[in-house]
Amino acid sequence: MNRDPLRVLHLEADPDDHDVVRRMAVSTGLALAFERAANRAEFEAALRRGGVDLILADHCVPGYDGMAALESARSRLPGVPYIIVSDSVGEDRAAECLRRGASDFVHKDRLERLSAAILQATSRSGEADRTMVAEERFREISENIRDVFWVCDARTGKAVYVSPSYDDIWGKSPEGLYAMHGLWPEETLEEDSTVVAEVRAKMASASPFQAEYRIRRPDSSVRWIHDRGFPAPGKSGGPPRMVGLAADITDRKRLEAELLQAQKMELVGRLAGGIAHDFNNLLTIISGYVSMLLDRENLPPPTVEALKRVFTASRQATGLVRQLLLFSRKRSPKREVVDLNAEVDSMVGMLRRLLGEMIVIDFEQARESPRANIDVGMIEQVLMNLAVNARDAMPRGGHLGIAVGLSAQGARPSKDASAFPGDYAFISVRDTGTGIPPAILPRIFEPFFTTKEEGRGTGLGLATAMDIVRRHDGWIDVETKENVGTVFRIFLPMTRGEVAAAPKPESPPELKRGKATILLVEDESNVREFAAAVLQQDGYTLLQAKSGENAREVWRWHSARIDLLLTDVVLPGELSGPVLATLFQAEKPALKVILTTGYSRETVAEHAKEGRPQFVLNKPYTPRSLLRAVHEALT
Image 1 (cartoon, rainbow, N blue to C red):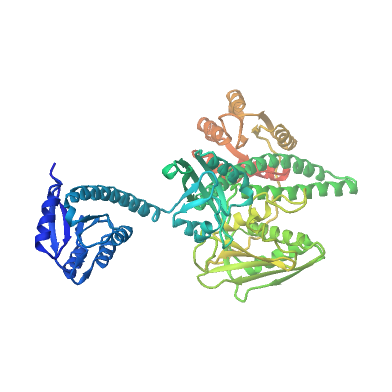
Image 2: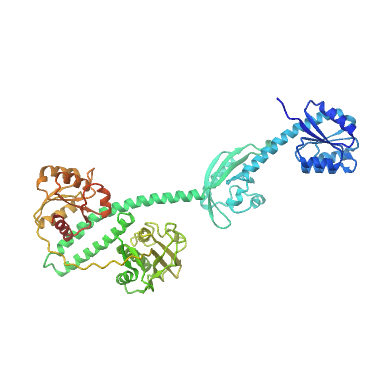
């Protein structure tokens, strides 16, 4: 194998001595390429050019101190072997040169030692070069990786080395860690003390470990750390060490938490939708039978009053179900362009009756009348939820200020990235209550989170409010101070559309007694019996089924005389209400259909992807609303 010759720089003023030294050096059998420097200028010029593998130097070159030559060589080329070849150096001077970095000393009277000195020096140099390369690679890696590379004494846990990323992640210099002989890991949270204790136990036994814990930085911020440690043998038979990597996983933890929250919200939404569906069935029974009783004449006044209270309670329960449906996204906004001044003014009257005399409500309109495209019922729900929370924050009474205003042009929330820049109006709700403690402020919009006594709050009010406002492309800001009060601002995008005209009141038409045959499909037996009683009392002929399969069996025998299919959307088994409607209308196109649901009309559309549009009757329904729907479907 061909190898490049070693490049030898020889500091020697006497050319004859140079020749002798060169011949002795060649006897090593190494391929050598000599360059002679006769004085200081030539020597230092050669050092600046570099490319030298070995330096042989006379210590007594005229005009150039040998120690100065050694210092220049060590400064310029610190890894290159430096052998002094001279005849005028005493033992003390030679020892000093070796102490300052010379590789060896060979007297000119004993040049037979030169070959061995060169071989030994170049051998050590190769090892040194490899060590330097390895150290340089380690330094390059440890100083540029984003994670913290650390080395600890396994027995004591004291940090021996941490890479520069420690400054970025822990937020401080590692010098303090070294000076205080700090244990690894440091600045951990007390809540993670069990994990840290396990880590240190693993380190003490020189066992590999993997752990996640939190640290607190000097600025009080908290970071999540994923730490991995591995045992390593001690240097030169010394105590065992642990080496490892500590990575900042704060962003990953935040994303995991957001994903978990999204999954939790989805599950809670499904649960809320299911509860709302079942609850609407119960409300249909309660409000339906109460309505039938109230329609009777000659009831004792106390009975009428009690029934009215039950009916009012069922209406309030219907409002709670509406919140559940909004939260589960089973109801979509039905928007119209409104004047916010006028709409909020009308809502304030309702709030005065709701909150009572202990709460003084002031209302301030915007100078200009902002228009917004909103679902009035939904925004009324938001305002009512905020007002009820404000009342609960003022148990001894207080002031509630409601105002309509305009935000700065091109405003955009600082925290809600989902909102777009634009022109926004806002509705502010300001109370003089107890305020919201900073510790719970980040959680106030979480579903089912409440600080109220058990039985007094559902924890859905603010979650529903935020969900409604976001579905209107807006956001809610909160400012609060303990023992001073809280202000919520509901921001809604403004529109230039025309305000919708108010519908003219119409007197309800007289309902004629029915003569048709109706197939009633409802899996909830109490709801089915209530609807059947109402329809039969009005003269209709009823056929009943409790499932899609049961309905197909009834249809098989009685399809010729069935005029109307009245079915719940969600039924047990594979046959839903819309599917039944499609199957039966394919056989009998003249068949009329009414779909009942505890969800929204939009949900019915999701189930009925095919087939003709159908009448939809929302639960809970009353006897009159049921009869009206049947009458309209049949005419």
